[in-house]
Image (cartoon, rainbow, N blue to C red):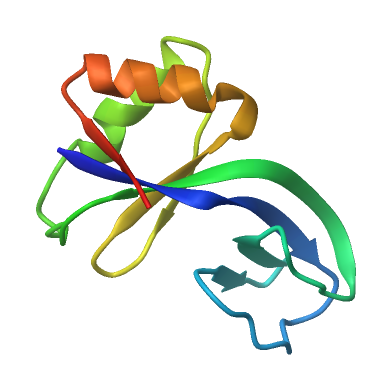
Length: 122
């Protein structure tokens, strides 16, 4: 399976109010009854940030993933969890992504490659 590593650093933000700013590039926004969350590149100026985590790298699972496919994220998360690497998973209609801390990136890439994943850079 092919994975695409994005070059930019990403962060996860908790916002105090709904997102009202246009954001360039890849980003993920969630609004629930309890919170407003945003995942985006670090190079962004957003007001009303309540909390944040940064120094993440975004990895895309290449290809359109059918809803009937089972265990794709589970395999990856198991490999990384067995090596004490946590992930942050994001899914869209067609695609799954996950993020790892920058400090764990090289170890993550090595583990995935040794388990027959092809990791390509943006």
